Amino acid sequence: MHVALLCGQHDLRERREALRALVVGMVSEGTRVSVAVPTGTAWEDVPGGGLGGTALEFATPTFGIGGRWMGSWLYGKVGSGRHWVRLAEQIEASGEVPGVIAASDAETWLAAVAVGRLLDVPVLLFCHDRFDARLAPRLFTTLNPTRCLMVAGSEPIAQGLRDATQNLVVVEHVPAGVHVTDRTPRHREPDDPLCVVISTDGPLDESYLACLEGLAAHCRERPSALAILEGPNPDSHATYKQLRRLGLTGQCSFAPRGREARGVDGLLLEADAVVHPQALGRHRPMTLEAMARGLPVAAADDPALDTLIDGHTAWVIDEAQPYDELAEAWHGVLTRLTEGPEEARELGRRAQQWVREEHLFSDELERVLGLCRRLSAEPVKFPG
Image (cartoon, rainbow, N blue to C red):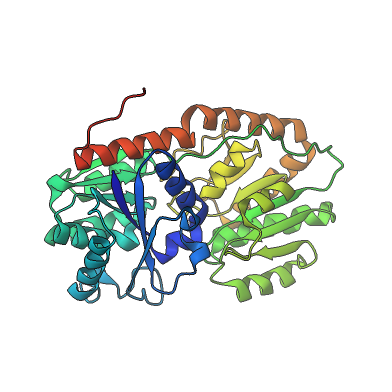
């Protein structure tokens, strides 16, 4: 089987390791994968680029200020036919015409649908963000619903897609998977300093600021506490000003994402816990990676995610509180993590076991390959 995987700039930045694992897994199962990436992408950033497979480039529209989709193909003004014709020609020239065109996220949906139509190939569209569901109806001018399948990373996102498409497109829920290790978090006592990774790529809104206020209150009680602010913060200058105002510049450091950054593994090796201060409505690989390592997770309640089960996989904070109460709630969670290390370890163990039962990468890979074979009408391979 041959799959052409189209990866957008956002996915290459935010989910590069997950994409790499998917490509490596598919190739190891005997699937040929051609990866198409935006023009100018470094070879090191191409998922599976070192496997000797085919790497193609395509021109992508610039998603303007204010968000990924402002001024984009959402309004039908960019992504003219010549881009997709050129990409279809590259895929054809690479050899065997693929049995499936896959789009890693909504940024490449239109390209996948257009190229699939040009090559008369079914398409597989991945969705990891509940806000992307509103884009799905705009595909129907070029989409053949009978030759398309959408894959959602959580059941709430899947239901959002079904509602947005009025059930005209088959939507499958395939839980995102990770590799579970036997590595255990470092053992800490109540008097040991706490190091948390605060992971978000949202703006500096009230939710994020309330978390920083709670962190400041915690650091006044325990000056040795440390925090790593992970993610491409769009308001980094404003965030730094708030850290200065709160007296946190000595306790906080920034950890940007990118090829030069330490990566998820490096951050989680240093952390005692992971904090998600905002409900962003999308799957974040950091969450499952932390759970898979037995690290406790504290997060703002996010209706789009089914990975945050309060008291079982994470300690969940209700964002719909007055600002002062929300800041106090974050202060309470950080204190709980510090003063109750055994309780935190038990939360991490429960989450790790839950991930082992529900979110293994091998299960995700098997489901994705099964959907690709279903779309391409390739016979299912049986062992032996």
